[in-house]
Length: 327
Image (cartoon, rainbow, N blue to C red; front, side, top):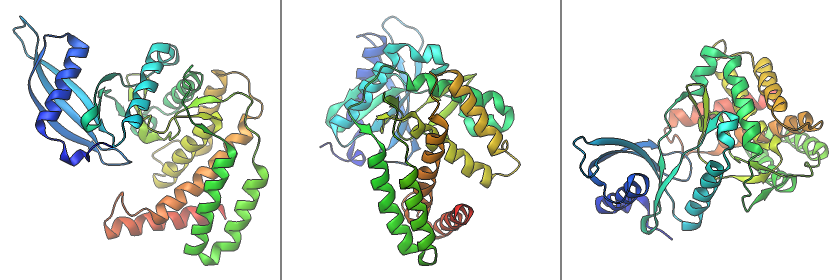
């Protein structure tokens, strides 16, 4: 178990940055100065951007690099992510599918610091608002090629695990909204009854795909945060993504394309870039409902992401609005 990231001292960071510089630019490069800037506190892992000034032997000019550091408490988690990213890069699928993933630069095991290339890009939400169908189709195509990547994570996520998680969340939501308990239980029964068998071949999955994990890089999709990658039904990733898009269109009416049209654009581009799968559409619809339960549950109970009282009240209000829209 690695020490908490808050205990990381400057000397440890310097060692990790120097190792990354040697790995990328040769053994004789030296780090002159560096600075750290927090990127995100969301999720399980703290994320920092490092601005590094380095000099190569005989070089008159200082070179500037931007790298991303992610902190892990367990070596196996960091090494698993690093293996996935290296295999995705080696497969060349990103070049074929119009997407990129961060490159692994170095890992500082004593402090659980994984260093990755910083992939710049714009928010896909903003680019969808500006360019619409063009960006949506690019997301669908890129995701289809990502799912076909010859990468085999150790874990498999099937309908049984998804339903077990669903049952737990429904029980907790019934306790929070007793007036809606009967409707919530009917929703659970219907989802259990409509669960479709997964495809015979499992695909590589991002596992936690949403718009926040995507960037738009001059016509190319950037996929970030492979902490939850798994194998399973590609409809799982699509359901997660489409549910987030649905939520955003409700929150930003008039600023994003109509959800029904946007959903159709993504799915059409996805299906055109992947092998024929006649059962995909109903499975995607099922996983959208599952993702909606998870979102309503997190909006209702998560008090850590935005702990301020007004933010909690706003999130719980959104949960009630989403719940009313589906029951």
